[in-house]
Image (cartoon, rainbow over all chains, first blue to last red):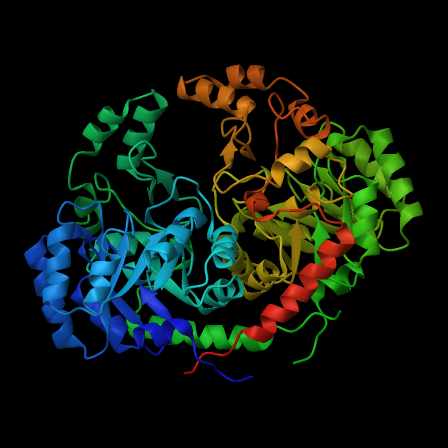
Length: 318
Length: 318
């Protein structure tokens, strides 16, 4: 039993095939640099930033680590084009795109020597990613926090299907917060994992302490895939959610739901710590996370757990 | 790397730690005996039978195999008590209970030397199972077909939490149809797997050919967790589902939904093959299954895939 080259560590020039998700209100330069310094790939989440703030985060991240890091850009975000220009100007090495067509930016980014991964929630879009020339696909299951697919396909079901359909490197996301679940993802055919929830609740996450402390006390069933009329989003069943749920049960139209949602709900909840009125995006696996650890500890623990579980498992007698 | 004793194979005295789910309209004596003959544990699904029909299936199963097999009994079923008496009279060795309290039958069955497993969809109920003295817990995720938990916890998220909470043998269910996903389940802490969808679509399943052929052509997103007001059930989004969905969107009460559902919907769909008016219960992983194989081939393939994938995976460099 020896350790071998891994496609994801080779692609991004990192030590461990573990990527921290680029999460709104969580993934600033502190989290990204901490993850990269500890041997993973840290991503800055641009989806909650204005363009000039992203530039600041990129520059601070580079000061805080000499290791590779990346930026996640949701392509539907109104500032996406400006974000990309800043990323190119600032010579960021890795971009993860999501929520849009991988055709739009992949070739332009690659012309600048940038490695590109795109996030999908279905095999159909994973195939489109490969056709668009991305370097890796992130396939994310129903259990993941935040924006999510309409098909509701879980990580256990999605990864083997994507693996069968594409030959480029595959990163699994959704429900992965331990070395055991990383080993499960590898068993299903992934070569790397993107971990969101666990890092959202880490010491270096920019989320408010109120949000983090609240989330490490959640139980199974406390999150739900909501806002299905707008864009399916996994969030905590708090008072804000109850208002949305009630409106939906009364048959409210999309416009009405949008009006209730208003703007800045995720900022209010996750960044400002209003647990009642805010939108609290987090994954199902939050019910498994009982402490706020440093990113370095998370990475080391995951690698240790992976190797330990791998040694415990045995062949089946045939 | 050698093969070791497995708690599930030891418990049930079987060769492979693979159990075929006791599924309504699918799991008769043909499927159960075929799975047991091939080295797994076949279950007869009593949930779609009258008591005397169960007796007939038990007797035929015993004629068809000398290997251990079991019966699944949903405890909310109106005939549950009569089923248990038949099981005891017929000296069945294994019972899987579901949809009810594990306290009700476990000790009585164990007095008769019967091994008992109970199916749960949450850690809370897994703990109750251990307290009730069951021999093993089946933890089933959101992706599973048919009746399902209200928490919507996926297999990837559920298994590690149940594993942490109980020390008795653990069987994972939901989304498992290949050796790779069996290895994933073992990585998450399970010692066995209960496979539903793949065996529902096997040659020996009692389901209609129409249903089987339809299901091996489903795509990702073609099943949904529906009937949440009554009892959450994963089924295919066919015309019958559309009527339910429309009623729910119009704010129909539970009584109204029950009225639309009527009786015998699953029989009409799965057993009689009415793909339009019937209720078609099947798991998300159906989109991964493209052929109707024999149970023996399924078992052999799963074991082979498990061992092959296990040999491919490597340790991580620390």
